[in-house]
Length: 274
Ligand code: FPP
Image 1 (cartoon, helix red, strand yellow):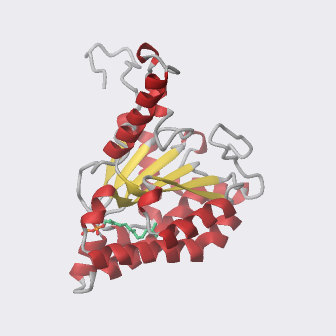
Image 2 (cartoon, helix red, strand yellow; image 1 turned 60 degrees about the vertical axis):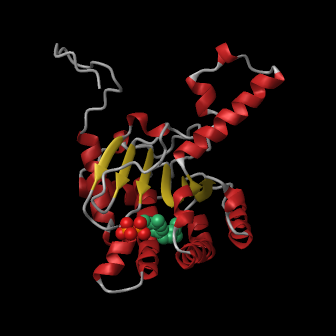
């Protein structure tokens, strides 16, 4: 049981609730020593969930917020260190104005209503993406919540907001280019670590699992650099119907996968390297 380790993300394992962890691991046959450190989720299918019920798409997003709550709690129970949720992409700004406004309002409400619960669970809230593009009132609530939960070390909840993987890489390239121009960095010294350390996700481990709900099998501009060796999980379930049970089942399947990171692990001579 890893109930007392800490690491570079600043996330520490709890002492007090080992029994609760033990129960969830035993119930689902999860090996606590081989948990994914970072789970990233593309929450898809809110609109279709609502359409199936002849409801406005916004109702699907509202129901989707409830799933956010339950999956955050599930990650905390499992002692997963980082959960990144793709809540609003750079492309989502092109949706109808009313839907964008409803999503921003939902986000604000979520932050206000969940702040104390996140804090009590020892979760720190962070974001990745273009914070400057968010409406002022959302930015304010976001900053307040980030500050309020900043010292929590049990888990990090990372919201991808106005986030796009290509924009993130572009942003990093501009920062690196500016250092080269100032003469503080030489082009030959730029490494993969240099790039990683200029991304929004600096200081975070790469995602071990990327999950997408609703049957779509695309990355949709999510964590393009970081997901290089992630294990992918797709489900037909629409995000509002996604449950803790299905999520834990995916974690269990993750533990059955053979992660080789491009290396040959066993004595097979089939030349496979992926
Ligand atoms: C994709 O479904 C979902 C989104 C673009 C937004 C995700 C937002 C939430 C889950 C709720 C608010 C977020 C938080 C963090 C409280 P879609 O609208 O593309 O669905 P569709 O593909 O079926 O149309």
